Amino acid sequence: MKFHIKAAVTIFASTLAMTTTAYAAEPVRIGMVLPLTGPTAGYGKDGKMGADLAQEEINAAGGILGGRKIELVYDDERGTAQDGVAAVQKLMTQGRAKAIVAGMNSSITLAESAITKNKILHINPGAQADAITDQGSPWLFQVNNTSTTNSTIFHNYLVGTMKPKTIAYMGENTEFNKAVLQNLRTIVEASNTKLVEVANYDGSTTDFTSIITRLKAAAPEMIYVVDAYPARTAQIWKQIRQQGGFPMEAHATGTVQASAIVPAAGAMEGVVTGDIFIAEGAAGAMAIFIDRYKTKYGVEPNKVSLVTYEAVKLIAAAMNKAGTDNDYNKISKVMRDNAWETPRGKLSFDAKGRAKAPYFYIQSVKGNSLVLRESFEVK
Image (cartoon, rainbow, N blue to C red; front, side, top):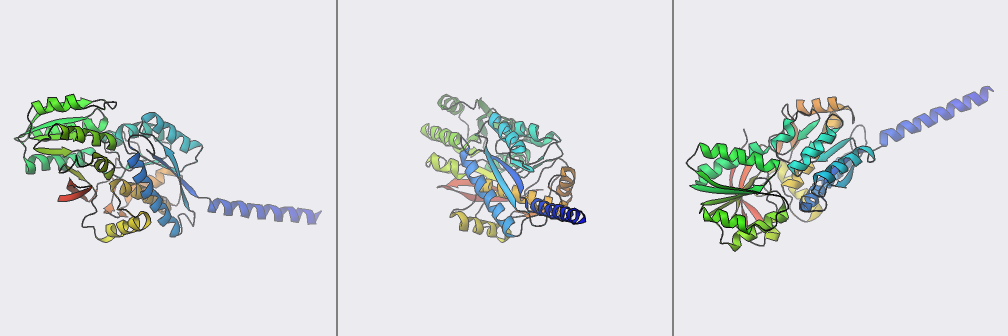
């Protein structure tokens, strides 16, 4: 009898040890909600490439939390709020994700963040609307600048450096557009520039001819387009070019990538924009990131690749430093209490979970690329 008890205890202890080892080795799953198909699929492709590189580097360095690998689990938000919400819910339940990376379009991200609020760590890599982090969700963080931060620098450059006497504005009726337009009005009112026309359109619009005709009738010195969808951006600029263009041309910050420039087939040449990333002149950690990315994929990264890469790296580093993958109060405190090394330099988060990029770059389209016009340190 004693033999059998001892054997049972030995078997139990062995089973417990195996279970503990299995748990320790279980990967930390991060749910990745990206537009893998639909009108912003270019963002999804670029974001996935950046995230996959981050995963590869983290796991090659030994993983986190005592050797656990991270595992990225993808779902497609297809460029709609409904699909974004469904993807987040699926990853939180069936996908067993310990954190969510979701945020390319502001309106979609607002809907997604209502699902993650007070339930799971949520990192928004790309969406810019201030309303996302104005909600006060304690476990929500934003890697990109807010639209107010980016727009303030950009609009001051348009008005103070380019100095058009008049601006005509067109943009999709979204949360992002509302924030950008409000900021532009504020800066224009304190300048000698006049906003002579504003045209908002629905997301289903495909023919912009009548809008462009109306804006041209106002004879503005500058046309300013605010649209975050690459395919539609290309279409808009093609139609602008068909009507002869404008003396000065600008497009919203953080939205001009190769996925818009290339299909525009030259129609965006000379368009002025701005962003938190540019490959030109990169040095230090940024140059290393670009080199690793080019080695893996054969192309240069863009801003979407960068911020998604950073989002995955930040989650892994914060969980590792906090010593947990599910105590979100502890992880969030660690996120806010520390400065984090990224290719752009050190990022820190404010009380609302907003990061500020160290630098902002004014750029213009040349060929299929963006070239630097001027850089600003973000205060």
